[in-house]
Amino acid sequence: MATDLEVARKIASVNPSTGEILRKLACAGEREVQEAVTRARAVQPAWADLGLRRRIAVVREFQKKLVEKKSEIAAAITREAGKPLAESLVTEVLVVLDAARFLIDNAWSLLGDEVVPHGNLATKLKRGYLVREPHGVIGIISPWNYPFSIPATETLAALVAGNAVVLKPSELTPLVALELASLLHAAGIPKDVFQVVIGEGPAGAALLNSSIDKLVFTGSVATGKWIAAAAAGRLLPVVLELGGKDPMLVLDDADVDVASSAAVWGAFVNAGQACLSVERSYVHRSLYEPFAQSCAAKAKRLRVGNGMDANTDVGPMIHERQVRIVESHIEDAKARGARVLAGGTRLPNLGSSFFAPTVLADVTQNMRIMREETFGPVLPIMAYADDDEAIRLANDSEYGLAASVWTRDSERGERLARRIHAGTVMVNDVISCFGISEAPHGGVKASGVGRTHGCFGLDEMVRLKYVDVDRIPRMKKVWWYGYGESFRRQMDGFLDMQFARSLGTRLRGALRSASAIGRKQL
Ligand code: NAD
Image (cartoon, rainbow, N blue to C red; front, side, top):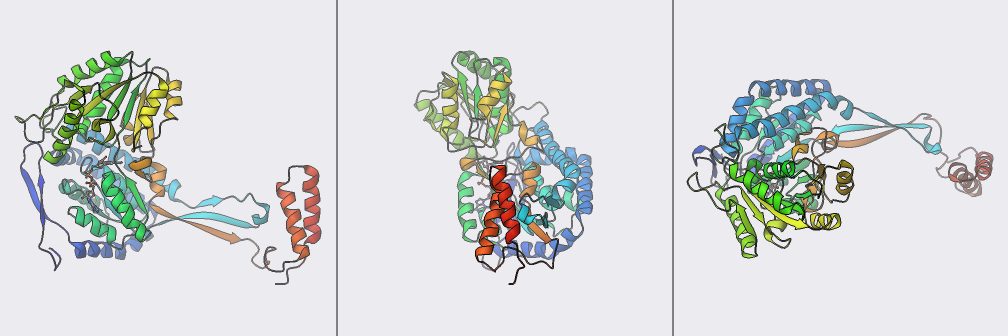
């Protein structure tokens, strides 16, 4: 149903491999989005009151149901997002199962009250502790590239912390979001505690402008900046998980065979449409040519096709508009002197959204392929001379999501990792940190604000309240009114007693402080 003021707009969920329309769905209007949030707000207190133990039990039930339905869910993801079934299982279903495991194992200790010991002598007569409270209703806006694992991991963390959730999934993958809703509801999450509102950008904007208490957004930098500006107007807290241009640094002592296999997987997994990725590679000049040739040979061997075929390595891109971005980046690179070692073209015999895994050599830092997020199956390779240059090139980007360093010497890799400006740096691996449920996920610079996953992701789902309890309720505090010379001497002595370096000054301070203590009159 549309709002009174607008004609019901429909979106079509399309299988990117075949072009088949899977289903048409009506978009939620502003009023419907607000109604969903209002319903969520009404039921959220009861959900929070259920208690952490019962909410964890629901997560356990969700995990059980997901294991039972893993093949169905994987097929639904592949049908709507195109990725190979193996990737739907490993990078989506497995990631969510493990995120549930993390919450089952850790939510109890991470969300419980926490004593705050006091170091300041003046506050020793008080005790304090932290209480983690749900925000209320959390809005989640998600993209199409990981249509299950992104909203599901964020949703589970929000729900276990006692929030209600309204999810606005990408307009390109609404059916996967509805599968997530069925699983959560079957596991015992009340219908209004988790709701999905379907639609394009305007439905997302409606969720942002509704009465939600926090927004967790994953998507492009452009939309993220717009959201940040709009949220600032009402001080709505937001987590922004945005785009990246992840560099891969192949050092002069790297294993070329291993590093080139990593580059090929990191650049072409999910047809290159991964936020954590290999978007650009920098290779020490001593390994440059063998690395580039190895990547090209491996890219040519990849089997591109319908993700439903178990033998497919690389599926289609999500949409023709994404293919056009890839083409324009490759054209720009070729026009400025890049060499195409593999691919470089569409594969129209397979369908309008298929693009050949592409390896580009002789790229330069000023090309669009090295500066803008390509988000497609392209691996650009550039040579560098020494570690300092590699770090400079890696950091020369508006993005800072993730990076990887490849070397036989882990300590050297870790030293360089510390110099790279990114939310995550992997030494001798790419991307898989997204599947480490304990590891925080998020970026620096234009790649975003805040974290999801792990204890820091859980922290985003709660408001921190500090409760302070005075142990002697009938005593007036020494720092209250009643200022004068005696008070000044008392404080002077107290500061010396606590913070002066020499023992003599500290003892004198203690005496001054004690001798000045008088009964509070005010
Ligand atoms: P997008 O920004 O176009 O859309 C993301 C979501 O925002 C969609 O649900 C969309 O409908 C909604 N949206 C669009 N305009 C909106 C508006 N004005 N107000 C509110 N919502 C709006 O991004 P996309 O194309 O769906 O996803 C690809 C991008 O997401 C890439 O840049 C990728 O790097 C990024 N991404 C980042 C991460 C991460 O964890 N950092 C993960 C996955 C994808």
